[in-house]
Amino acid sequence: AQTVTQSQPEMSVQEAETVTLSCTYDTSENNYYLFWYKQPPSRQMILVIRQEAYKQQNATENRFSVNFQKAAKSFSLKISDSQLGDTAMYFCAFSDNTNAGKSTFGDGTTLTVKP
Amino acid sequence: KAGVTQTPRYLIKTRGQQVTLSCSPISGHRSVSWYQQTPGQGLQFLFEYFSETQRNKGNFPGRFSGRQFSNSRSEMNVSTLELGDSALYLCASSLVGSGPETQYFGPGTRLLVL
Image (cartoon, rainbow over all chains, first blue to last red; front, side, top):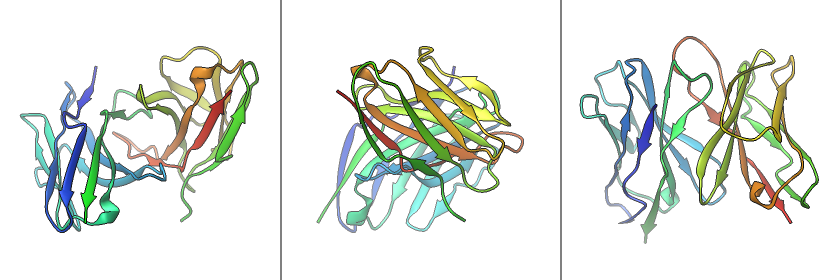
């Protein structure tokens, strides 16, 4: 069974600084996607970034980038130039061919950006 | 393109009642999945529908059911509500091509059972 582990329940960062959120996963599949979702206090789940496992290049989206280490099954999210609006819970998630329509989520990391 | 929409956004029910939640996917998306989110259990997968058929199901009792219509809109029903059913119910849609899928979420329905 696929599992996703986020070992940091809470983190904080000063505005304009950089923070890295950690995620590890376990799977025997070769074809899968990894995601980071953001859930602010409004509870809307927003897709931040996606990484296809077959791609060696790390995905980037503006201030958000990932460090994808396939052999280590590690998938961390780096947020640069943190902004107050980045305050949210961040979920790492996984999707593959074997479970139709189901993404497996970690327990989340609550990130607080301090002014 | 409009995002995933869910109605109603908030709902208060009493134990024993039943409730129906609705989800309209992004235009062109054919798969709709439902998740329950609670502080203690995190995000748990309920079920997924594609082409009006349930393709996948999580580990929830039979009180939780769903269906999908020909326009891909989906409804979720919970019968005989229990206090523990209080949660945020999230709907997600995806295109359903081949391979893994990227899910896009709606704003959720907050259900409170008294």
